[in-house]
Length: 210
Image: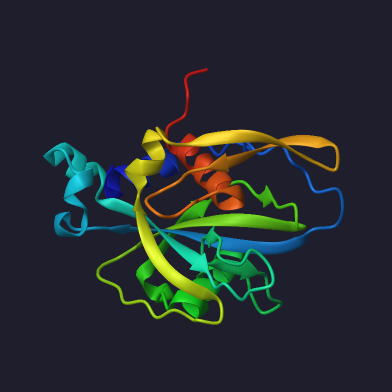
């Protein structure tokens, strides 16, 4: 799926509620994350993952993810989107996501075109997370804040759409059943809220027949 196909699919499909079944029982803190997608050149895509010209086209769009710093108090070492808490100075959730991405990984907000948002997601730690979807234009340079981020990497969108290695397992929290998604990629274990939000993105792009 190339960038133009992605934009068309994302904007034409009606937004459905999140597949998440967990609802936090108390007052939530507001947060936003940026699902940033970039186009990768053929030379940047591993030959091991490319079987044909068609596959190269599908793999050209990738998702930007971060690995959180190991010394952080919460979710240390986990894979996440750039993002964080809404500040009083933020005028929208999109601004929160863009500001946090600029602070955490040095992504210039002027290079990001915001397409819209996915449905909100409740975390078990009490955050109402709004996923903001945007595409990055042109070449971009990143500079991570090592106090928050250990690594930035990209994953081909096709990896998430294919779903061959993805699983979800039932978990119980405060007596309520919900599912935890797992989406391993190379040495990275993508799971929890990040994987669930990706699952919602894929469901939005590739809706199942009624």
